[in-house]
Image (tube, rainbow over all chains, first blue to last red; front, side):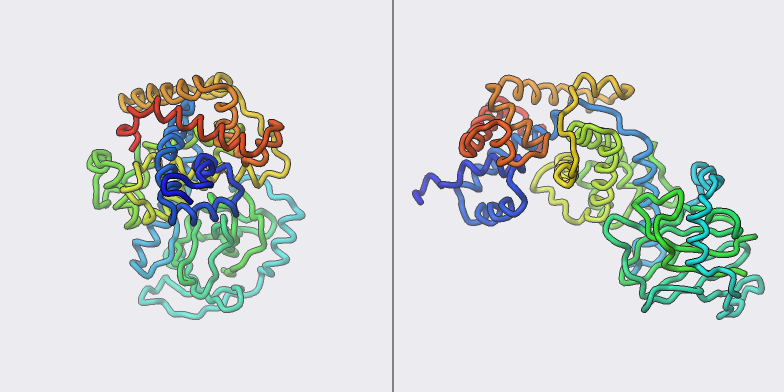
Length: 240
Length: 202
């Protein structure tokens, strides 16, 4: 190779435009690190590809994206704050009007029946803790959790906090969501409690009034949450 | 307006006065309010780019949502020596959009016209900074339009269509080397035309 050219210099343009297939792109990335000619050309042309990012006609981003993004961000930030540096990224907000409306939607009978069968809700709650110093509080062990995970829920004054350890992170692109099962004949009610875990741990406030709630469920859902569960619950808490 | 909590370490006015790079320091610490200001500043450009590439609103929304959540969770990766936060954000959106396009098994990759896009969404009030950016964007589009057609075409197909160089060569029935050469020549011409924007965009 001469000192002022490189046989791969034409690849610099397709590299900055990301026109290379993925495997080839990584190979050229490695080459750029060791080739001053190509490195210089990539920097030169990269300015143009960066400029192109800013050159598209400008539109207004729909407000719904912001709601979905910020609901996850606030939830995760809150959990981080609550648990400090060791915390899992996290969850919980006040239920919005949208979510309250969603909770009123009818639940397809077949899906509901399937979910309830899978949950086996109806067994008695296992009281594992005392009052925590508050005569109105109790701690309930989860009726079901994945192997290796354990969880419990503290209930006080009609509100609850779910405490989970040993839980695997949700699949890529998904997030855990908390549901309230108020009655076996109606659909589980979606909540805005969305959470992920770090080091297997999470501490999640369960939104809403737990009066009349027979079960609290957790499923993994697409980021931003769902109107109805799309997966079988990974955690269930029986309040009966 | 940003939803800033009363007990936040930084007030909304203070946050809005911060430069993007300083906001990213706070995002790195997990401050959602700082992230929200970053979102406010760049979400419209991000959506515009995603829509330009994906052609459908639903796909563009997914790309923007994924990109900003990725940004929130990987804020520590931002390196101010490599460029502006805006370019970093748009780079993430661009990569996500390309991934989305290439994942699509059945995908209509025909691009909607710019005019059609503009008509589908309401205009909004713009700040002086945004107006200046619109002027810059027009300058960039103008530089692209003035390229020889075959050079502009390959750049459009690659950068906004998500096509690989091999796919483009096949579509245009041209040798791969020719496609690469057109890309390089086109970018070099644009660079000479846009030299004045370097400071603005960096």
